[in-house]
Length: 274
Image: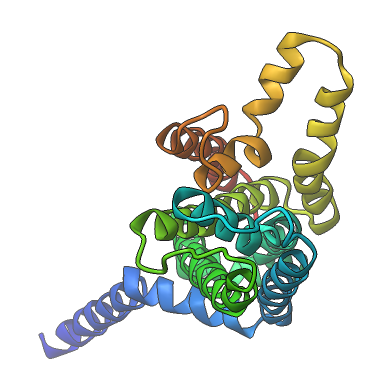
């Protein structure tokens, strides 16, 4: 009787331990450890931080004539233009990092260990997307705020008084940080779907750079319309207001792009072998 009970208790303990290991918190913690242990993460975030501040300072020093003696909403728009100009380059960096976050695990075979620990697989993708999004949002927002604080005295020297307590200014900044998050998630979906670092980077940068250029070269109204719906175009309406889309419309468009690529990656992740 006791002999039969002992294996039963052992199996029960094993199951309980496995369940504890597969908790949502445990998966998130695991993905956070992976993200911060990658050199590419620190290099990419460091480059984004440097680009944001460096480009903001350079732009504020060379474009002061454009912003001379303005106030109110115009001053807010000027501050947003200066502090977010680095996103034009930062989006390329975060696109590459988004691919590397997932494709690197396929290249090293580490993804097999992740799937052994989480056989359902999709929680791994979800946790990776959540951790990557939070880290990207925080780093981008901090870099934008620092760029604003650094360039504020330069702009004030030519009469640009952007009120730091203006709620609209912070909504612009939040939209700019969200833009890089969405670009990163699109790239993460591409990397998970292709499972190849070179292919994922090529496809992601192609979507950001090549496709918009091709549409611009086509002299047709439909081409211009389609170009406005691309992530790199629609997403800018999150922080540059008054464009083709309202901010809430741009948010829906970007959520749609993320849903398409993440859903595709999730379906392929479930169907294919690691």
